[in-house]
Length: 173
Image 1 (cartoon, helix red, strand yellow):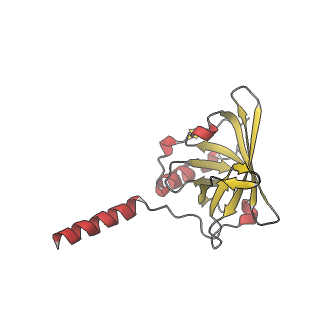
Image 2 (cartoon, helix red, strand yellow):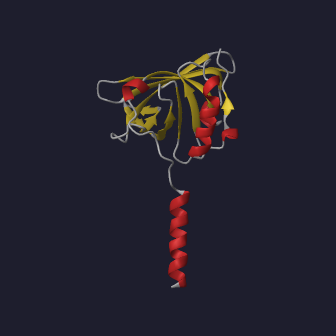
Image 3 (cartoon, helix red, strand yellow):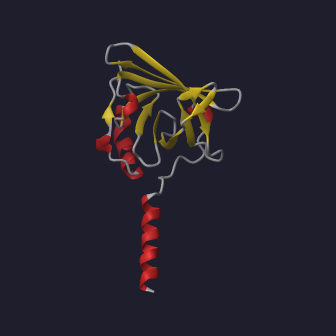
């Protein structure tokens, strides 16, 4: 009996450690499309060249996929751009996607999680990231009007499970 109890505790602990925070329920994908400015991010290897003016544009393709164009100004002052594809994984809530920026002969490879954890009722800001919370971004429609909502956003980051101190603010001109 004691061994069974230990096994149950271990399984519950493993399940709890691997659980993904909930995402937005019933995301209106049409309202989510468009231009988003990066307000802050957890530093990551694939954006290390970006020094400012980071933004993403999402447009719906005829096949239902989402065209993703990310851009930034690099440390040399030059604008860089990368194009990718996103696919909605959870068709019920539309808040779980997978995204790829690697294409070989028209086939997208190496998809990563793109989860929308929270969004303002008016879609003016969003918190997105990966299920393991290793990657995270604060996005806004207007890079200069986010300051009024920052306390709400940081409270949401902590509720999701992010450490708000891991986020570094992005310079937007």
